[in-house]
Image (tube, rainbow, N blue to C red; front, side, top):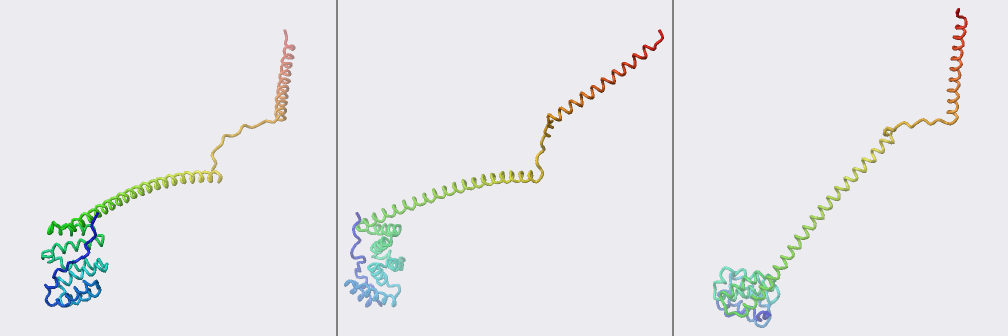
Length: 246
């Protein structure tokens, strides 16, 4: 388990003695800082920075005050002003340790790992830096795993959405085809109702029994008339034979 972050975030270690123009304000700020009056200490450090904006002690200790007050982004900003020369100073290991501590408070796990690694390169025996490095690295790995899982879920959801869109498009196409078929059927029905009905075979004429009887009588009368004519013809021929001179 990670050790609790060191109670004294910045060891002021005589940094004020390095100041020239700003040494009065730095010393006053250090006294107030030691009493826990961080806001009053911040005022003194900012006065020192008004005189010399590049003051190492002013920026370094002001970052400590911001950290104590929970203004972690402001603490990071103050430390960033020292990045060009603090790492090469005699306080380089402390600078990177404090930068790592600020990044842990900001949950900037990658920044914390990078800073604490630099601290350990300058001070390999720093136990607090080792434990904080392990702590930050574990959180960084968890964060990366979560991001990877989120990306996989997003890709999976995207694939599912694409499949759903394709299925919906296919259903819409099938529905359009069915509607077109139904519409064509309705149009054909409308044309039939408007007089363009398909041709039908003529139905066979039906004869009633009365009509059939009349037709039979007409045929019989005709046959009788014909027979009478034949008999008359035969009779006429017979008369002629009797008149012949044998």
